[in-house]
Length: 222
Image (cartoon, rainbow, N blue to C red; front, side):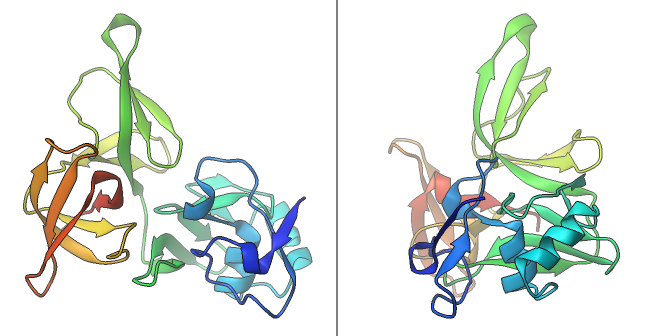
């Protein structure tokens, strides 16, 4: 288990920087370092469910924490944007999101049968199959090339089957996950593919125009 100085931790971590010197690092996993936090930080620093890493280790070892329907047992496991965290004993479910100050936070939700996974890339593989590379490091294989980069799949938590999708298109709401408008939800109004990377035009709740790159835009359900 490795650590880093709290002052050097990613700015997305919503933690106190001065009360202790060190904090645990995330282990290598499905998310980028800046878009994820260790499970112990979620349970102790953000949710206040445990007092210290020893308590966190104990409940994790007993299988009381699920991330995307999978039991996770290590303090350093990285939980990232859009992941679903379930605490069955407490009857609580959370989705990891991001604030307007660019801090990761656990948003409590009532139920979760699927999660939203943005398509980051795709590859044609043997026998006409398409491999979709998803936000968060997962890959799935589909039979038809019905999706494009930037679309979002509704992926079943229990079976990892595609239950539908959200097309990156005009008049669709999107969460902005990076840039100066991070944490805002705005409506897509235009997509400019002549610029690389693709530029997205959005409109916020005050009808103000926002321009940002495709990788900062995460389509969500209305």
